[in-house]
Image (cartoon, rainbow, N blue to C red; front, side):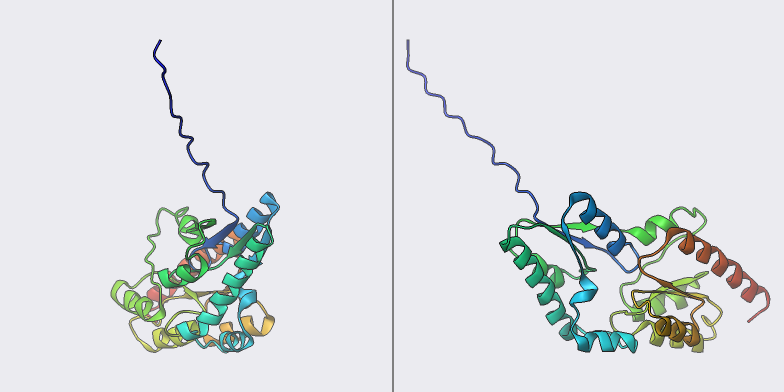
Amino acid sequence: MSDERIAVQRKAAPLQASILVVMGVSGCGKTTVGTLLAKTLQWEFGDADTFHPPANVAKMKEGIPLTDEDRWPWLRAIAGWIDKTRSAGGRGVVGCSALKRRYRDILIGARTDVRLVYLKGSEQLIARRPDIRLLSARDGNTGIQLARANQPALILMDINLPGISGIEALKILREDPATKHIPVIALSANAMPRDIERGLQAGFFRYLTKPIKIHEFMDTLEAALIFGEQEIVQGR
């Protein structure tokens, strides 16, 4: 009988994630989903907003948009938390917008055990209303152009937008006869009473704080749509 030699190669076991980065646009539920995910997995949760240096926090409270130069130390601090958690043998979940590839390069890089979870929360909530079509913009200037070109029934706007702040974008929309009638809803992680009051005084129709509450969000959409229709009928 011939001597048969059989070579068996085992498939490498898939590398398990030690860190999950929950990413997405403003209002998609990064903090809510990230917290629940960490609790379910019994992992540590890190909220990206807590990693901002004091200078960034001061800017955001004043409605001044952050530049990439402002974001680098913030992203490096999150990356430091990721590495510290990994080196200690722990596992964690962090909620962070991370919409630009160069941001994700800092957070993930060559870390093969760090994975992304991409949320589209606001879009999914709005999808509950088949009569509404969502147009998205990643910065304030693009959002203003979309508003002028499409005349939407309402606008959802993050206070801390890239390029220009939400308050600055609102001012431009209010000064334009073509968009001044459109109700604008603010979305923000700045939940202090003075932040909410400042936003409402600036002219936002409503000021919703994160994490977004589904029923409040849907009720606000309905109220804004009704208000917008009344503004058009009254010719304002």
